[in-house]
Length: 181
Image 1 (tube, rainbow, N blue to C red):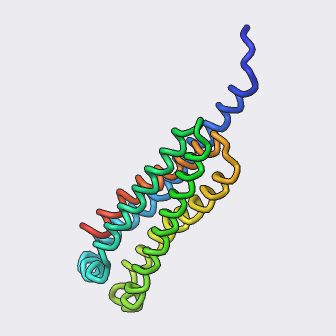
Image 2 (image 1 turned 120 degrees about the vertical axis):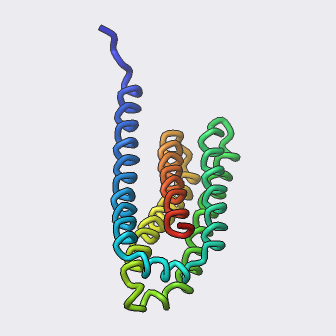
Image 3 (image 1 turned 30 degrees about the vertical axis):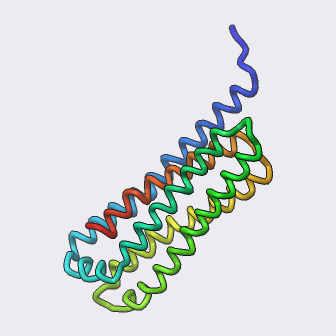
């Protein structure tokens, strides 16, 4: 019987935790997006009217910002033998993540007034819930990128990068569903 080194067991445990986290996030966002779809079918007129108050161009630009951040996170995960490059990539990923947050608040400021319209309330409640939940994830992981840049640890960077890509995938589903449909 072979003895498995402790590091392999620790890696397996962190891999399991990572996949539980990933699937948990996908399930949570999936439930929210299914709820959005159901409500959009029940209230097609008010949802169509509410979408006129959104700014898809700004959201499209924000998509590019988020994907550029994701690219920097991937570079950090692949630069393990270059600590300076890894730190720079993590800090760029964080900065772009914070730019996403700032642009989203700019977008929210123009949408907030329409949210008070009783006919548009259902749409905007779901919109702010879904995009706000996503925004909280972006802000939190961007802050973790800064901490990871201070203390470089391969497993932490891989976990954060994986979660960041999940956040991207969620946004890439949300963006056309909410802004372009």
